[in-house]
Structures are given as C-alpha cells and as structure tokens.
Length: 79
Image 1 (tube, helix red, strand yellow):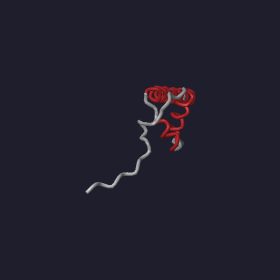
Image 2 (image 1 turned 180 degrees about the vertical axis):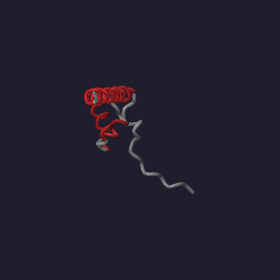
Image 3 (image 1 turned 30 degrees about the vertical axis):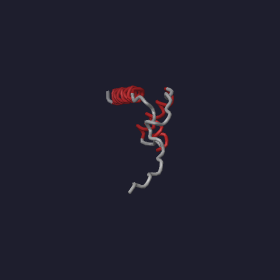
Image 4 (image 1 turned 90 degrees about the horizontal axis):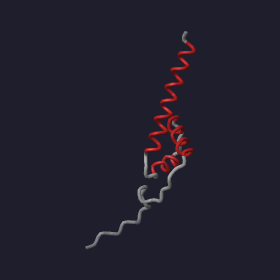
C-alpha cells in the first residue's frame, strides 16, 4: 500500500530567488510598516530577502528621528 502523492507546492520564501533591496525600497518598506499601511504583497517581498540588517538599521534610524523630532517639538511648545 503506497501513500498518495502530495501535489507539488510552490517554492517557499527561502527557496525563491531573492535580490538585494535598494535603500529606497528598504526606506519605503520600513515607513509603510511603521504607519501600518504595508500591503501583503510588499510584506512577503520584504521577507524574501536574505538579510534583515538593512531593515533594522533603517528602522532604528527612523525611530531615533521620531524621538528627536518629538523632543524638539516639546522644547519649542513648552517654554
């Protein structure tokens, strides 16, 4: 008795061809994620890359800019 064959599945994210994203693509992906408006297709494309480092670096820079901007705004509004 043999088991029925499983239908072939599409290649997983790690098996698919991935390219290195440009800095503009990384900035767009991080800003869209921070605002919560990232589409599912772009979300999957981001996870298809091999390295998470560019996303972490840009994310940390964006958060630092946000914090510094808020501190500057408070210092201007509160004498």
